[in-house]
Structure formats: structure tokens, C-alpha cells
Image (tube, rainbow over all chains, first blue to last red; front, top):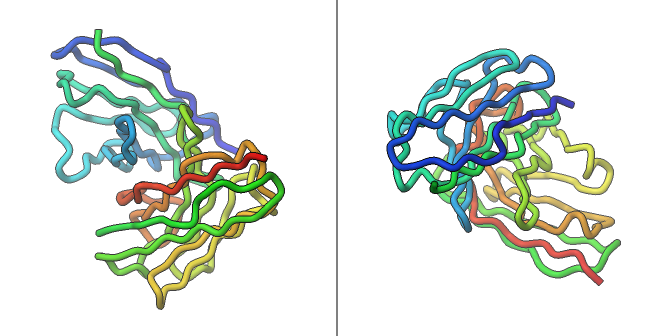
Length: 107
Length: 122
């Protein structure tokens, strides 16, 4: 199975900060990597697919990069509505796996 | 576009439960569907996936042999038959629409239901 490791597990940041979350795969997943945002009590929302393709309606302050085993999600200027938990997911091969999540908290 | 799950509840260890998901607003038989779960206070776990025509089905190791995913394209419905339930299966179960006909090599889950809660306890 492909293990997805996210770091950090949590980050405290202020509005306007640049935040970077890393996701590493135990084996190469090409660009079959998605990022999700989840707010408390809500279902996850797809932010980025194919490692770097921004979903329609997602603010441009979100960006993704990487391929193979190393990926990053960057929020260029953190906004109040961005405080949430973020997950990466590989769909390269079965079983599909998620990272453990990164909680972005208010500093 | 909407996914509505049902069938969750409180069940004793070792018993069975069947979850259902009613899909609307999109061409159901064009897309693979997944079940994803989230234990209280924990992260997301992919449980199972089924391709558009049921020709490709896969499970997470921790449910293999106990859970069965199926779909009825005529009824726009997705199912998860859960047998031999364990306490560790307690979670919110999401029905999820993938972005292609297969659960692998796709562009992620672009539609989620609100989830149905399964609690396994004596």
C-alpha cells in the first residue's frame, strides 16, 4: 500500500501568512494527487486535482505542486475562511490512501 | 448534484448493516463511486470504490472480506453492505462521486454526501 505522510500535522498561522503543507508518498504516484479542505462538521471539499490543477471556484491563493513522491499545497495569503484541516489523497493505485491531515489553526 | 446517504445507526459488534446512497443531478453511470469514512476526531479513510459499470471494485485492507460495495445504475444508487462489524468501524461514512469512470487514476472526489453515522457498540 502507498503511505501518504503529511507535514506538519498542525500549523498555527495568522491572517495574511503564507502556509505550505507537504505530502510525501511512500512510492511514486505520478501526478495522481488531490488536495481537500475540510471544515468542522462539514464534508471535505476538493481544492486541487492532478497535483496542481485548481478546481473551479477555488481561490487562486491556493496552489499545488509536485509529482512522483513529493507534493506541496501552498496558501499564499491565509484568509479567515481558510482555517480548516487539509488532506492529500493519492489515486494512483489501490488501495486509495489519504494523508493524516494538517490542521491550520489561528495564531 | 447531490448525494444522500442513509442506513446508518447503532449496531452490535458482529452484526450487519447496509448503507445506501441516492445520487441525483448528474449522469450516475458515467462515474466511479467511493465510500470514505471518518472516525470521530480522526482523518479520512477510503473504504471501497466501484467503477462506472461495476467492472472494477476495490477495498481497503481493513474491510476486505467483510464489506461489499455495489451499485444500481438504473436506480442511481450506491450501496455498502457491512458484515462482521467491529468497534473500529464506528465512523461517519461518506458517499463520494469520483471525477472519472474509475476510482484509480482519477482527479479526486468532486462531490461528497453529508454522511451517515455508523456506531458499533454493545
